[in-house]
Length: 490
Image 1: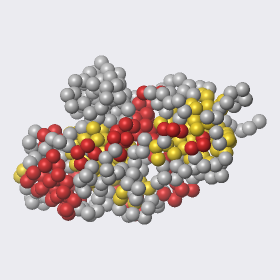
Image 2: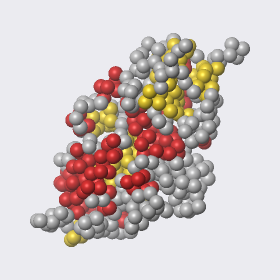
Image 3: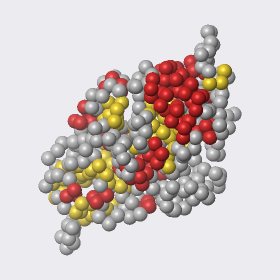
Image 4: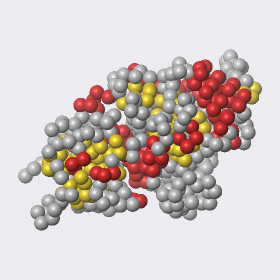
């Protein structure tokens, strides 16, 4: 009788030698500054180690949390595997934080923002950045929210003044990534965004920069040719299939609203090729479509699907979001989009399943050779649409297929090297990995014995049997169709 072994992907150390090499001792930036990989598709450190962006959306962190709360939140983020938190540096002109301090006491003149003996707005921002650094976390600095610029609250000259202030203050911090824009189309006040970005980049040569666009858009649409844009970001948004909701400038086909993978394809159609990631997918606990409390809420299985679809399409990372966390809803502090701070304050939402499941994706991506990975949908024979679409990616000697529904899969194992392949199944909801077996180099149909429910999704992993990336484990919820009467080769 073969012994059944089920181990946690993270806790059991089920990682390959390559993953062990990429996990640096100390802080991430001990590996040097972040930069774009040679092939233009990933992020890496100066010493060549890969950086897989795993972000949480903490938009109102600088405004709504005090020092102790910020420290607690960032510690929880680190414990859940996040290496990035995206924040709105200012959410108003001026913005006010929990201490009642304003971001701009003299408009866009910043000479006197630091008053002796006063713990001001920017002192608190400094603290948050340093606190994140102590946890090994980068801060994605959305300099000013797009709606403020759209409303005319910052012009080109003010953008240059603000950019100089930000760059001079933070150019030597090691854990910064600049994010221009903020939920806005790049063709709205483009000159302001260019002024802000080029000013920061003229002073700060140490940090990467991107642009956070409006829902269902990618920054490549407006800024891919800009020298200040190091990598692209898209916002797949919060709408379900068919929720067009009347947009006049709808940049995607109808009934593709949830297909986050297509934004990666869209971004890479622009030249030069730059890394891309989803900076705002559907949030856990937010209504589908945002604007009606009667609509169902996005669940953990939904946020997992958005993440795996995007990354397997080639994204260099992913940002998770939670309705109650992103705005730090709590008793007495109202939340937008029907967040209920009384029922579930932000510190309880940190226990939501989706928040704690994103780390399995990061560990999986770092557990196999990193920079040769490409999306390859030809791995899947007879693919489906929408929720039944299987997302496939591979390197030279391994492949992975994300399966949202737990449906049967017909997989072409000949797409990678090796006369035989070791195959595993990873459960996306808890990170458990089970060994299926050793199979010949051919097309095989993998049949699921236990599909159904919100936790059916997972990843089929096949590796050239001559490689030792993963330890062999036995048994699985999957079996392989080896019926001799059926020709399983193509």
